[in-house]
Length: 331
Image (cartoon, rainbow, N blue to C red; front, top):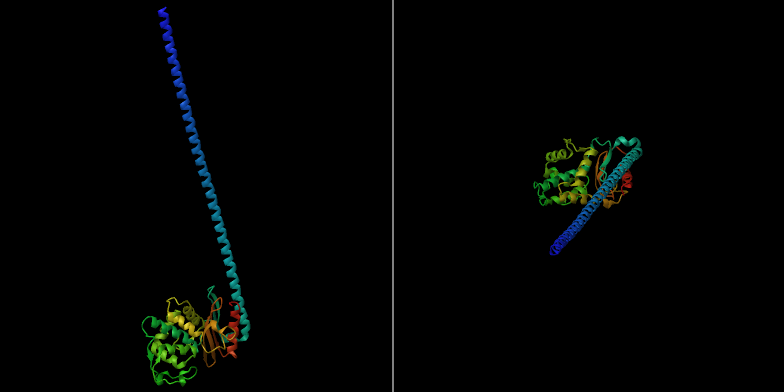
């Protein structure tokens, strides 16, 4: 009987151990299952996150491509607009030239014109490389050379120059002919007089100060070729001088002053006859059959013009009318 109880006890213990082991195994399985579920959820979340990143990258790439296409389209439109504007300006230039030639008619051979639109960098010329007597229009590049040498320290603008009756006197335009010249005259005053009054004595005194050969050499350097020793010039050469005066690449403050003085001239029967005088910086010139005017017109769209004539009846009015035509498209 005791033996039977012992066997039963052993069986009971074994059953208990089996139950405990089974319960532990079940718990372990459940833990593993739970851990696997967590890991699966984590993996799924990572995949979703990666998917979102890929979708975001794809979206950003698509937006970038759309932006590039938009910019390319804008660039294409701008280039197309630029071409249309250039074509329009080219047509406008062609029409202007034709209009002026029609106005000049049979007198076209007696006129030299160089025109430059500062905004577009385009222009045209009529007999642009034909030589005319520069007359007093030479006083613009003469003063430019003077002020170049001042900036270089080779001439002192504050100095005064003594009048020499043997070399400096010349009749014609100016006010020094009737003034007392016993005292030296400030160089800056001579410069102003040479432009405002087209004073011939002042001009001779300035050229003597610079040196005629030096002046001519510097003229050649500015236009890129040797210039004649005589006082002759082409419309295109004068245009080159005026462009350099306007651009003032060396920041010469005296160039700026010169432009201001050119606006104060007492002569108003040509370029600024039908154009507001305060926007026209110009210099006239007369010598025998030659009647000229050159300048910079500070319209809303500024431009440069040089007009030379030889043997032309009513030349002053012709020059005024030519500039009026040009001003109409620039005001």
